[in-house]
Length: 148
Image (cartoon, rainbow, N blue to C red; front, top):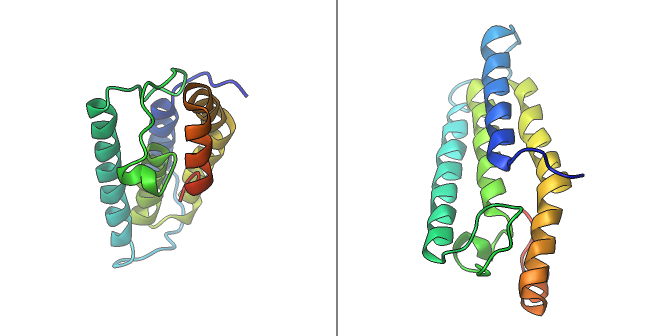
């Protein structure tokens, strides 16, 4: 499947849909305080993870855009545990929002995000990484999981 929009657009649309459904459509709350505060921890962790990854892309002077060919293979930092830490961080934020809202119905949005990334962006990125780095990327791919 060919992507039409970039991952941040999918993330933003799903984030606003989650907030919209939670506030405008009366759905029974299924997660209660203090457990909802675990959602804040996930949100904060996802934000920190994405800031860290953005910093790594910037200092290594390579692209973060899925459609572009990267110039550097980053395997340090969060890339030691996930081949796609940006998507992991965005998923953590969506999951955190759902938990913080206490609404299990909104858990569909992080699931939709994972499905969209797996179907549209990850195959394209991994193809570009294989094309750019060949055996080096294949070795890295064997050592590090796609998500976590």
